[in-house]
Amino acid sequence: MTTSNPFTAAARGLYGLEGKRILVTGASQGIGRAVALSCAEAGAQLVLTGRDAQRLQSVVDSLASTGHQALPVDLTDMSALRQLVVDCGLVDGVVHSAGIRGLSPMKMVGDGFLREVMETNYIAPMVLTRQLLSRSAIRAGGSILFLSSIAALTGTVGLGPYAGSKAALIGTMRPLALELSKRGIRANALAPGIVQTPLTTIDADWFDAIRKRYPLDVGQTEDVAWACLFFLSDASKKVTGTVFSLDGGVEYT
Image 1 (tube, helix red, strand yellow):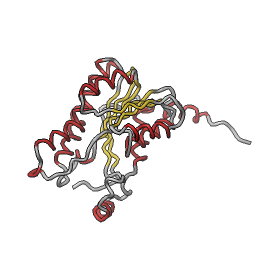
Image 2 (cartoon, rainbow, N blue to C red):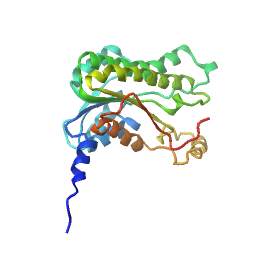
Image 3 (tube, rainbow, N blue to C red):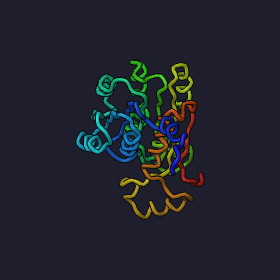
Image 4 (cartoon, rainbow, N blue to C red):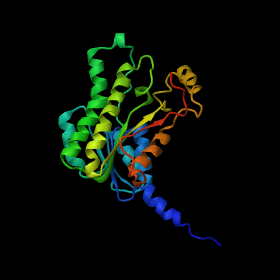
């Protein structure tokens, strides 16, 4: 004989995303794709953005349920970004996943390279956030989540521009969280360590050496996606202005 578990329904309500509409940037691959898949499984309706229209549509086609939307856009194109906000309508959550790596020693950083990293990793998500807020496109009780990196909290040779752009997200997120508290909108940041993707495993020897530093192993894209579910769900309704590290126990140097 089985008995009902009264916690089950409550847990689904708190940790699920039923009835929520979530905007995910950089959703055509990697972490953004994993976030989209997990959010759809949790019951959300998705608005997905990315530069590659074909890959983005393939993600939409693979999502659980229907009613999802693909809006291909280059987020560094300000006019296209403004149109994105118009087209996506009201949302309950935003995951700023789009970004580029930006690997270069500081003495070799070119002006164009530095601008590209900052425009993609910092300016684009901030302008998108501003546009959404100016149109009151994020509902009360909503959640804004920035994908930062432990590189913003540690020192790693060759990651100066990247680390700077990710640290800027954290620096802006904290006052933003205070500003939005009256609207009931939360703002937080995730700071993952190395996540295993085709990009990070191109140099197998480098990746294997880095992997040994992680007591709980390096992250998988779904690890980041599961953390996103918490911050997008009502389970985190009292959590704002925080930086949550998904670092696998790696020792900071």
